[in-house]
Image 1: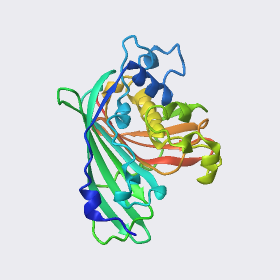
Image 2 (image 1 turned 135 degrees about the horizontal axis):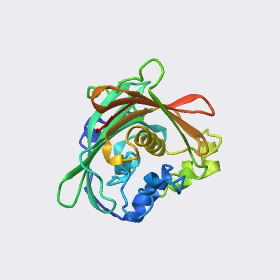
Image 3 (image 1 turned 45 degrees about the vertical axis):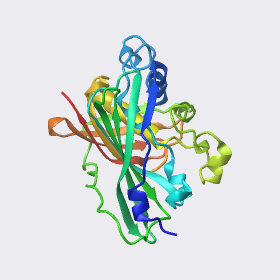
Length: 286
């Protein structure tokens, strides 16, 4: 049964008020691989309480309204949904501790056809206690079993593909075999990322890494390569997920510079030689 456009487009999300502390900020940073060299003081500022900074992509796990597509009222075949794209715009530095208010809405419901599924774009804004806008988080969910409902929105502008030719920068970052077990403590405790039997039932030889953890590792690569580990310079980060990553693999991030602080990137797994994140676009300040 196809989903109902009006139901999804007008889905009511409760406001989420979330308090987090320095431990949460450090745990997120550890989950995306910061602090692997405990003598590197540039990385240490994200995993040690002295002069602590919150890594900006932590915004994607804050104020989250939960796995709402599983609600029977949505009429979505939630077993078949996958994370398609992630977009993030940062309006102000994320404090290392505090309270954030998340406000969510579905901005696009796109019908790709009866045999091609549907895409739902959810937008979440994060505000501090004073009402100041900290970040805008946009997530595209590909509902593989829910196309053909006959009406829908135009898709938002597509993300740009990676340029041809050799990248200007290349950054390799090892992903810890324990990365998924660490990262799941931030927000997403889906057993697919921890239980070998659940992973096998889903068609994977072993538990896979969270897509948002791969996204965070790619942000880590950009901050290391283009921002001298000053993550406050990262202004936006958008990407499309194209294949899963397994804990213990190596992420290779190819980066192309563009004028005005614009970057293009894609990420691949060195061991298997496949692109796992494509159509990457970022913006950094001088």
